[in-house]
Image (spheres, rainbow, N blue to C red):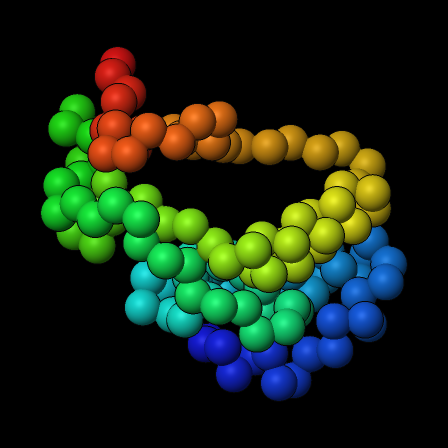
Length: 123
C-alpha cells in the first residue's frame, strides 16, 4: 500500500469521527520502504507531502541497549514548512474530534540536539 492511495481518497469526506476512525483502521501498517512511512498512515488522506529532509544521518541504531530493525537508525528528519502545516492542521482536526486523546512520543520530541536526541536515552 503506497502513495497511490492518495488518488483514491477524498480528504474532505472524513468529516465525522466514526468515518475517520473506520478509514484509518482500514489502512494496514506501512512498511519502511513505503513513500508515506515517514508521514504515517493518516497521510494517505492528505495532499501529496514533500519527503522529510535528513538533517543528521546515522548508521547506528537509536539505542545500544535495545534491539532494532536494521532500517531503524538514529538519523533525524525534518518536514518542510508546508508538510508541517498540513500535518498540524490535520492533527488539530483529529484532536477536536477525539473523545480521549493520548500522545505517545519518543526521544527528541521536546528538543532537537543534533546527533544526540535519538541516542541519549538509557534504562
